[in-house]
Amino acid sequence: MKYEILHDGIKVYDKSQFNIEHILECGQVFCFEKVGDKYISYPQNQYAEIEEKETFYFIKTDNPEFFVDYFDLATDYNAIKDDLIKYDIMKKPIEFGGGIRILNQDLFETLISFVISANNNIKRIKMILNRIRQALGERTTDDVWSFPSYEKLKAQTEDFFAGCGAGYRAKYLVKVLSQITPQVLQKWKGLDSASLRNKLISLAGIGPKVADCILLFGYHRGDSFPIDTWMAQMYNQYFDKTDNREFMRKDLVDKFGALSGYAQQYLFYYTRELGKKKQQK
Image (cartoon, rainbow, N blue to C red; front, side):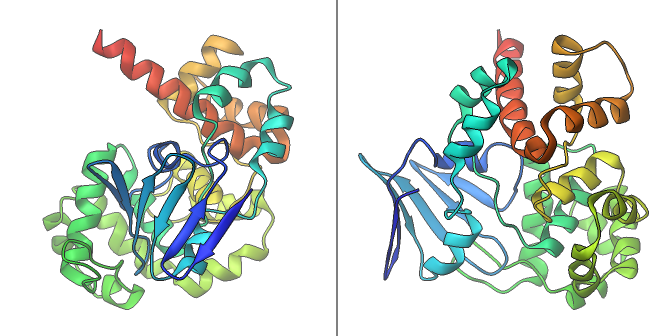
């Protein structure tokens, strides 16, 4: 994909492979806001403003190298889409959300974010995370704080997380922070996907769906396929009638193989957006 690194940001020229709305609104990340016609993105202690121009997207940032990696700009998503579009079910989702890219997110931030995401909606997830950032992080701009360190988070009580709005997840956050460290999460990169999934599910507050999200969005394991309500509906409509989400997950990974995670993101974004429109009628 063609992009250009400048002293104050990045120009991304191939809009068929990069659409900031698709990327940030497809459910994979929570550290962003839409402000007018632009998006702001603030993973870890970084900050960027992304705006669509006539012939390119401009990612304004003082750390272009970070965001080249974060937005996975070196990966050719046209090749991925060419492989997936061979499946009839993938044609409309890819046409609809063809600008999706799977972000290279920090493992620790991803794990904590998705523990908070369990049985939650995106607006509330973002609110909880931003309250935690404001209480424990460092200010990076007037309205944005960095994601807190492991040490600062581990020092907190259930009452702190409950006060940020985490609800019953507060006890899971305290427990999971006693079970892992960022170093342990990094060490687990050497495990195969099945063993890694079992490790994640053994942690407090992490069930199969959250584990699959961490596998995909934190570990970049393409052979993972998170199953939520939208994906269960999709599976029952197009593949088979069942309530067994573990069966769905295994079957879909068998079908899509190493590209399962990419397929899931296109299918999820398309199914959810269509479903939301139907609900509004």
